[in-house]
Image (cartoon, rainbow, N blue to C red):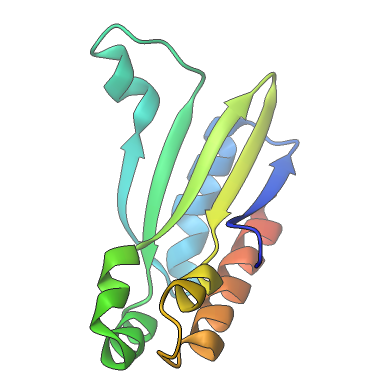
Length: 128
């Protein structure tokens, strides 16, 4: 079994990586559906953590194809990229879309999920 996630470390700041991910994703065909500022949400309840945002991204064409192969793929949508600060570093982590095909065996999602994963990893490598 593959790793659940793909992770990259960047020398750029948390804010810069967050801005670049928000800008570059649509340029590469992935709409940013939501950005969850987990640090801010937890701070409202008195909990303190280092900066952490969850980016939900989607490519409508890929989503349509995947849903037509197996409607249960909706359980794993949209794709998520986490950006976090840790000890002065910025780390990006992608929940691997290819894991969806392993969780839904026989669905015919392997090629499609691998393509989505390759493109999202490309975005991460581009902005790091």
